[in-house]
Amino acid sequence: MRHVQFLARTVLVQNNNVEEACRLLNRVLGKEELLDQFRRTRFYEKPYQVRRRINFEKCKAIYNEDMNRKIQFVLRKNRAEPFPGCS
Image: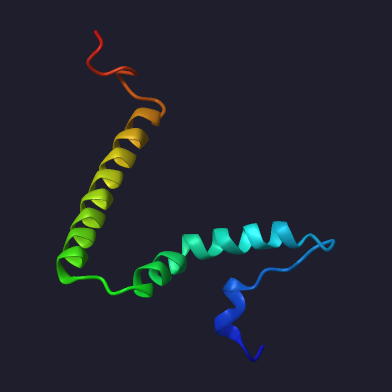
């Protein structure tokens, strides 16, 4: 293919269903955070706003990682004590 860089963002329209293809494209762009980046660069973002956003994203990532670790621990099978702390 000549345009390999666009391969990941290519959506096929099946059965002339354009709305479904648009939804799928929006989902792909949302996962890659391209829409967020577009919205951020639309207007000038002051330096204090950049710092606040980056700090919020870091805190959110730490929180999500911690919660995912706790959820995976709870959902783990074959534990010696199935409900820790409930005896």
